[in-house]
Length: 46
Image (cartoon, rainbow, N blue to C red):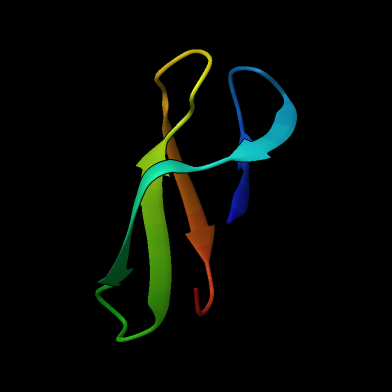
């Protein structure tokens, strides 16, 4: 799954992606950027 890395300012493949549920009960995916190791986040079903 791809997400937007704020630090690199590009779309990249999310490493160590895991599905989570936000506080408002909506699904999201959280992981790490493979280049700069910054947290990446994508809202929506994975």
